[in-house]
Image (cartoon, rainbow, N blue to C red; front, side, top):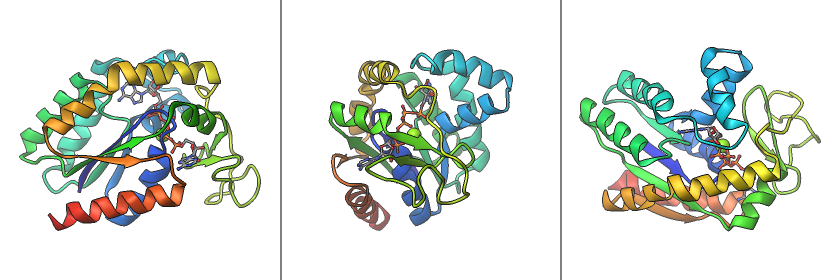
Length: 218
Ligand code: AP5
Ligand code: MG
């Protein structure tokens, strides 16, 4: 399947991507994860991205677009992917459409997760992530089995550098200004599915998988 998961910082994109990937077999492509991996490895891309990420700003389109569109094109028409954190501007969405057109395919579904603003802040401030596999936990809503340790690989969990409350508020503002126009963009393409993300992780998962069931049958 060719999917996008859209939603503000803290909406649960990463959390739900894990379930969607398990269910569909799609490749999870998270631009945030790609940048964090590059920062960890000290690459030039990582250095460039960090300048923007640390202050909650978007990395410029000309840096992001080729990374994703090259991957999509290299997968060809049989490629099955879930984009998390991309596109984030109309310019990025247009670049994605160009890549899809080049390989002769279209998107199957854009999953749009809606969550109230104050809940987003609470979720992000309580988030802990695994620096090895990238899995997200929450100190109270979605804790690991052993306090502070990743269930999957036993690594000590950390807080992301951009998860301080002030930066989070800025990231949410940036989302509202630069990314919400994509909701109308994909509504016009008739493939947007709205999901109420104010529910528990399990309830949101059930709703998304039910929505995808409808898409698979179409
Ligand atoms: P990115 O990594 O994409 O971050 P984001 O969009 O801000 O989203 P988050 O990863 O913070 O949240 P999420 O929706 O994945 O939530 P999660 O599942 O972890 O981007 C980071 C930065 O990289 C950007 O600011 C930008 O600088 C740059 N960047 C990336 N892509 C870019 C692009 N395309 N263009 C330009 N720049 C780009 O959940 C959050 C917490 O809530 C967790 O603790 C989780 O356990 C908990 N939780 C999840 N679901 C629930 C629930 N239902 N109930 C209760 N708690 C829940
Ligand atoms: Mg994420």
